[in-house]
Length: 454
Image (spheres, rainbow, N blue to C red):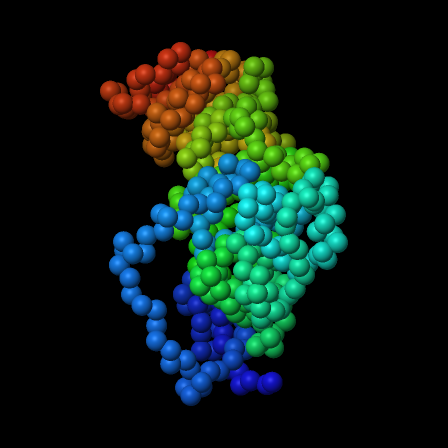
């Protein structure tokens, strides 16, 4: 049956609607992100006149009587805020082939064995292909129901009839609504299909997982409004050249955002990494030239990582500045501070920087460690064994303390580090006390860093 439609222009970056096509979105300022899609027009006569839901007080709406459902991976439960919440809609996005389907199949098997009614809806693979993956992972005996369907209306009928507790849609880009004429994966289809499934999840209490694709820039494919609609957004990060994977909570209405789960990929699926700091420290007991150690904070978890730098005299007219794992502009700022306030002439040298293990770190707590690694390579001298660096580097050359200093120092002491270079401007602070076996070396200015490093 043909339905009347109208053209709507929506920004794929922020989800803002426009009355006509524009080259630049007025809301977020992005260029070439406004696309046209056609949505059905609902006449005034066909609008629902049913009464809205009855109002309840905060106490009446308390859900403490419904405990969270936990799975076999405590790391994932922690990222979700303690387990599954009834009616929650979770969006899991990551690069192709990183293991999104593998992770969700493992979690579904764990929840099914725990007594939950689960349904895995695949729009990309057949039921036989999903079963083959389950056999490879050793979970083929789990009571997980598998179906293949891409119509949002047909999926809604299946969910209404079977009433599962947990549902996985793999993936949201393959689902389409019969009310729209556009192709699956378009802005209109993703937006409408997700809205249909979300309304059912909230009304029935079903936990809904949506697997999403990402663009070549790493952003979640589809309209940005999709991220606003769901309750939790999980980013599945990693590199195919490394065995580890990181599940990061970008948004979470039922717990703190920014939490991460560190997993390792193996032939039998994804397994938890018990000691994440030891996982990323390979050369701790054999210090090398150009390496330094620094603790970073990922959500509520503290990881100790190895920073690597290579400084070499440039043989070209323009020295190279290559950074992996941090913003290249941050590396340029640290080099400028080292030259201006530290007196180290690095302008005619190539500088290459990397965080071992392929991690990406955005916080400034590793500034002091980056500077230490650069100075170690520049002077061709390794740092002392079991020494770490912790502090933010200011443009004036000062080393400043960062948040959760006490927790980071406790992690270093637990791992057996003997020394840590910290800011010298926090005399008498609480975090400077109570770290048995760990000596704090205070350094106020970047110019004094060489004296305490070697």
